[in-house]
Length: 46
Length: 305
Image 1 (cartoon, rainbow over the protein chains, first blue to last red):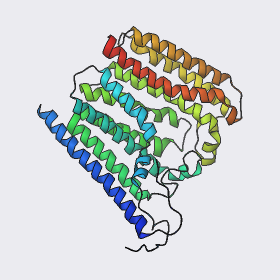
Image 2 (tube, chains in turn orange, red):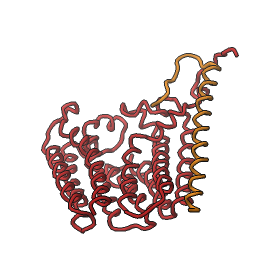
Image 3 (cartoon, chains in turn yellow, green):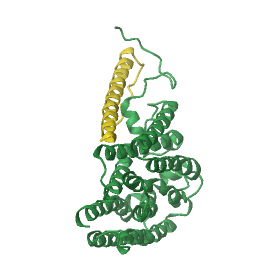
Image 4 (cartoon, rainbow over the protein chains, first blue to last red):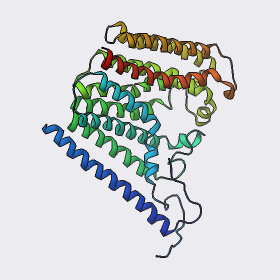
């Protein structure tokens, strides 16, 4: 469930990797919300 | 691009992973919350658009996640002192406290707003009350002050079927209030069974759980005593004619087993947590019990009645 905390000094590569995975997760959440809001609008109009 | 080492310190570290944000929402606790809300919604037997129903349950899940995140934000020091919770994102140092606070507040506001706009205002109001109750009444006010923390705080976990019903009907009626009462009265025996065999954890963290303050003997008796009104709440929907015979017979059988296990706990004198089998059995069964009761209620209301 949780991401391991790497030992030793943090590298740029580690930070970029973590940022990429967060950005991807955020993109998926926002994409899901777009679909949800569209579906709610259609359901409310029906 | 070259990788430059950066000094690791509490304030200069990797940003939290998305899985840590997910862990902050207590997904395992959320399972029971979502299930009971869904059962409340289905038991209402009112036609509801599937998208609106999905949105209602999503809002309950997000609201529960927000409450869990705010609970972990406030209790990071307690979690660090307990074996069971020391690996959570905040005590383990994988997340900044402020990030957890922002996440929790944002998620809570979003879930209530979405419920109000997409489903109905009553469901949103009950959702807001349940989040505030869990965070302000249970986490901030009661948990560190009184052994009755679980008794009163249990109300927070009892709201989901009420929210599900309100989402479907826009009203609050007798059956969802009884379902609220069932979870409310189920919570003390469920949590006290757990706290009996993790007593040292709570004692080390300074949490005044019943076994820490009143001792194991008094707690075992309380477990059984609270099981009695819970049993009454469990069979009340059938006794009042709100459900059919399937629910009634199943509720009587499942509740009798619950009472038998609670009686075993009340008779136990075991002091070694590793050997507290009746307590572990009751804790495990209590989770199954609630799932089974709500599942049977839905089958009874939707299929039989």
